[in-house]
Amino acid sequence: MDDDFKKNALAAGKLAGEALLYGKTLIKPDVKIVDILDSVESFIQEKGGFPAFPSQISVNTIAAHQCSALDDDSIVKESDVIKLDVGVHINGYIGDNALTVNLNNEYKELVEASKKALKNVSTMFTPGTPVGEIGGVIQDTIIDMGFSPVKNLSGHGLGYFNIHTCPSIPNVRLDNSNVLEENMHVACEPFATNGKGAIAEGGSPTVFTLQVPRPVRSPIAREVLQKIKTYDGLPFASRWLEREFGAGKTRLALMELQKNGSLIAHPPLREIGKGMVSQHEHSFIVGDKPIITTKIDDE
Ligand code: CO
Image 1 (tube, rainbow, N blue to C red):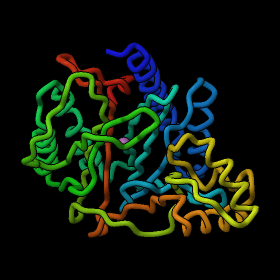
Image 2: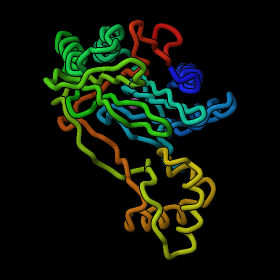
Image 3: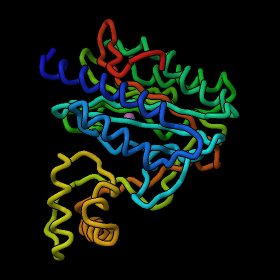
Image 4: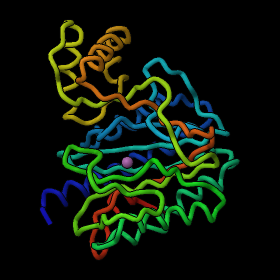
């Protein structure tokens, strides 16, 4: 195995795991969600890593890509089903993990469903395993507990400065020929719901990725684009820019950069049946003895 890859992927996974558990301790009633996200990202940088994507807290029926704007004063409520998703990169190698918290345990079983699904597949990241079989075990586990897997969300390969590469790790049984290979680096993220089992994009995006930097007209957009280039092609939060350039300038710049095709937007992903959604995620290095790079304790 490439030494650089292994050393950095293990370090990124460990820090991502620590940051996730740190973030979990901050999820308490009436705490501002944006403050939790800021604290997790500061924690990552203080320990020598960088966010591989903006830390995200997606609440209730939103499965993913919910990321507070700077002026978002939403707070944690005891009944919320809160997905915390945290990614770290160290020298471009990524660790990605997530967990779900429901403080009053109203949705305890739903939270348990995605957690158990991830646990049940954690020994399957061995060379030659068809990814569709992993999806099958996820699907069966979640259905056995009375819920549905979210079929159009999947895990993904983790590339160098690239959060979503091949192979895709489905959350349902798929009959395709993709098999895992030695030293593949992948994130597996089962999502469970009491809704219809699918998501669609909905709402204003606050997470973006630089695709191709195209020439821009306005000086504001040019200035913001220079900053965006420092994110190394990884996803970023509009909040990071708002802090530096102000909300108005940021909004104008992001609009112009989306219009001219420089940016891809990642809007919130909502369960189409308005179901509650839980998620658990770990990063794995495929091998005869698979390594869970993000595993810190029992989460
Ligand atoms: Co992921």
